[in-house]
Image (cartoon, rainbow, N blue to C red; front, side):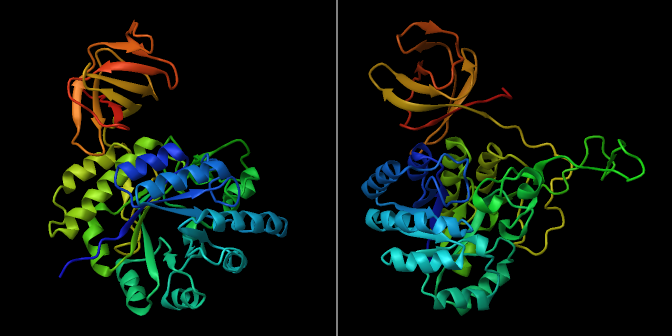
Amino acid sequence: MSIKKPELVAPAGDLEKAEAAFLYGADAVYVGGKEFSLRAQAGNFAPEELEELMALARGQNKKVYVAVNVVAHNRDIHRLQSYLAFLQDLGVDGIIVADLGVLDLVQKRAPGIPVTISTQASVANILSARFFESLGVKRIVLARELTLEEIREIRENVSVELEVFVHGAMCVAYSGRCLLSSFMTGRSGNRGECAHPCRYRYFLREEKRPGEYFPIEEDDRGTYILNSKDLCLIEYVPELMEVGVDAFKIEGRMKSPHYVATASRVYRQAIEAAASGRPGRDLAEWQEELNKIANRPYTTGFLLGPPAQAQDFFKESEAPRVAFCGIVREYRREQGMALVEQRAPFGVGDVIEFLQPNRGLYRMRAEEMFDADMCRVDRARHAQELLWLPVPEAVDYLAIVRRVDNE
């Protein structure tokens, strides 16, 4: 019996990241507008950019989900109604909500658009899933605090689609419901402005010893006791597919095109391998690729039960990473030259590799490079400058250029 392939949903903080997600294997992207989504610093999409994104998605038979998962205040309601009418006219593939009042408004103002319940709603049991199903939603993004067996039990008791996070940052609070940012900085995480205070370094102070600070753990760097490791479920893709999860979600609308491309490519390969009866075929290779984008050490989160070591207490050492240094905008086969848009310094003598949507990794040493006027240069120093790089082997459009630091 063949296993159903879940939809792979990738993050897109802007149009470039959406294009990368599509090219590298995502079936859909989730995005935010300039208001009402929970990533205020992600770039996000103005109305005309959403129109451009929809045209791009339709041309590739892909889907676009728009996050409207803000915890709304009264002052938001009037503007929200007109925004929902715009999304209805645009014909987006889904709207992601967390607030019950917003859900009611979406169903009234954008009745033709399927609704996804955000992980912010903390759906963690059969009763909650049935409740939202009774309200007519199409999909639920389950709370990240569930085990594989809990996901299985919910799947067996509801027919609504289930989406599960498989990769990316975890939150110190239950399903992202955190007050630290608002309390410490005045920036509300529940309104898209999280300052990530869970990643700050903390010390202990005794009230009668002002000015004396003690590490919470015996370590001279302080402690990152609130700081979660990053979620990575690449090893458990087959099990999640067997359970019947309808969609895999990658976290990271504020991450780079390199992150989006790599994670989309790896999880697409893992899905296809499991569907073809060869689960885990290239697990070591996939893990190596994901280590190149890791911000923190990885954890399987709650999938196998309450995690023993999910917090990154000591800022553990990570696997050697490559440096994302550019994106291929064009390849001219007759000259054997790639036009690269710089994202970080690299230069002659560096070993670089190309991560590509339709080919394998290609590695080479940069022997020479030229600026846009074809004048020889020794280094790409300026942000997003265009450079011509001789590359003997053809490379794909939107290939990710990475400097290999350990060679």
